[in-house]
Image (tube, rainbow, N blue to C red):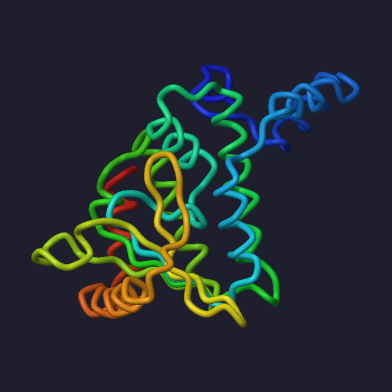
Length: 230
């Protein structure tokens, strides 16, 4: 609650609902919470990738810098969006975070795609927001990885230079479309249509699996880092 009061993190809808009940505000606080997003939509490319994720049977993410969006907690996402959008208003940040949280619904349910993330250990060593936020983020990852359709693998810090050092990418498998290579910059994102580049990144992901720790060892490493963050 103190983080919300000090503006360190945005209030979730359920928090607004609970406060509204305690203060007997008759729904006015919830209406105010909803109004902060009125009239602002996430960028078109965010909506495009969300639609692709909803149709996918498999999603593969590699990231050397931040936790992939589909695995982020709301607090971590808020810090990450703010860091990458210094000129964004609180309203815009809130809408982008809300869109990211909504996208995570794709990983829930019987028809959820298989999801595999390969993430560099440095991502977890860098406290995003605070050590508490990072510890909570790692705990969330470990919980997500309990799902048999979700796997999170870590490239250990002691790994020498490897081909994934030049940036993040995603491979989204969509029926009747095939493999989609998706890449993002600070301000936009989109599919890469060059077939040679797609094949290159499919092979690159296979190489990254070769340098990442297996699932059990990745989980143990994340548990250790979480303990260090507390």
